Length: 107
Image: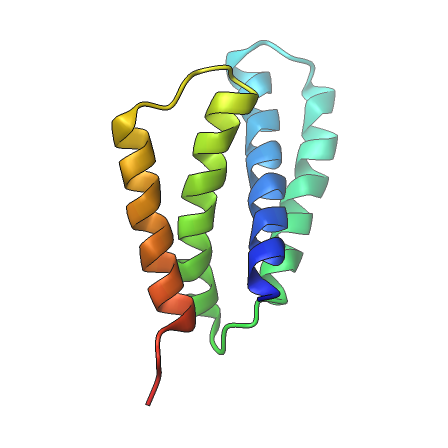
């Protein structure tokens, strides 16, 4: 179960790094936001390197579901936009798919 906290950390780091660039380009923030944004994206990439998945592609695919869930949480908590039914249903589907990819029985 080490994958869950690892993927949650990776998602937070990736979203924070991407939001830094979003803020510079779309919210007219200082380019200095790119410094912590870059550090966050490096932390994201490093975290995925420690995934318990047996192959990189499988790690990235499983992480995708967690990223979707973290993005919807970001929408609610940071951007103060209430997720709708479709956001929540899509998140549930993505998490189910991520669980199958990461923990499905392999022969």
